[in-house]
Image (cartoon, rainbow, N blue to C red):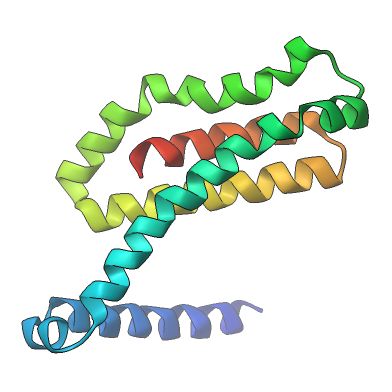
Length: 145
């Protein structure tokens, strides 16, 4: 298993270095439609993040019945999303200045993905705390996108 992981890791590093070289070469970026593809992807990313943020609002009654929780406990789903908003913009700005916008955007997208997957697993396993954790992770990533 470790050899398979190391082999995949080396292949992924090779792929990432190749993509990085392509993105840094001016002739490739200017002669192709890559900049338009990247522009479209950057516009779609916040849409997906905010869609994931607003979806639980329309599911309040079914989720309250499914988990047998009160409105106060249901609103924790949104509180866990917004609590990271106190610190994340400052930390995200520092990370963006130190490590770059690409890295920050990638990490924020990974946090959003992990948060959505955690919330999905929490609903499917009927584990409310996992939903709260997922919403917090989603909130961390959402503020940096």
